[in-house]
Amino acid sequence: MRNYSERARISYNLHVPPKTLLLGVGNPILSDDQAGLLVAELVKVILEGKGEMLPKWLSIETAERGGLEFTERLSGFERAIIVDTLKTDGERIGQTYELTEDDFEKTEHLTSYHGINFFTAVELGRRLGLKMPSEIKVFAIEISENQIISEQIHPEVMRAVKELSKRLVLMLLRDTLELVPDSHE
Image (cartoon, rainbow, N blue to C red):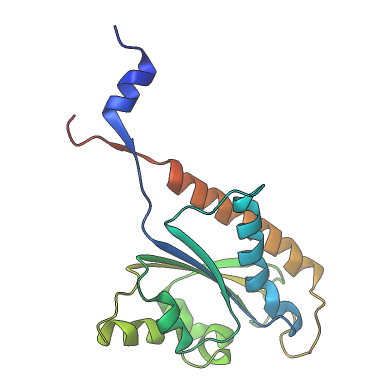
């Protein structure tokens, strides 16, 4: 008689997540604008732990420029997780948003600060025949300041950096541990 762990091994296989790029975007010397960079760095530190390597399906990078650079950076990935900042009128500093393509028309930072609209860069890559991600998630942190040269970051933005980093680590770990039914069952 087989035990439960043997049946589980027979019935399920570990899911290999799609080739994923986590890209933190920002400027390290423009105050709160560095938040996207910090999230990417923190996620990498947490996942690497004590000398462990990132899974082969995951790349974590930072970008200090945007626009057409996104086309090249995203090429070859199946999924992209982008972390950036935005500044709107009257919103709460440190608020984190998950954005869709439709939201980009409403945000100053993600559409104009880095050059061209992020999704325009992705569409350009597709039209050029490049393999671009079919799944794109954009997380943005509401900031207070992105025009003053300073390495200081607003405390609420830093709080959001830590919270979003934890959220992304859990999301990526959950992807790794997802079980899929065996096709033979």
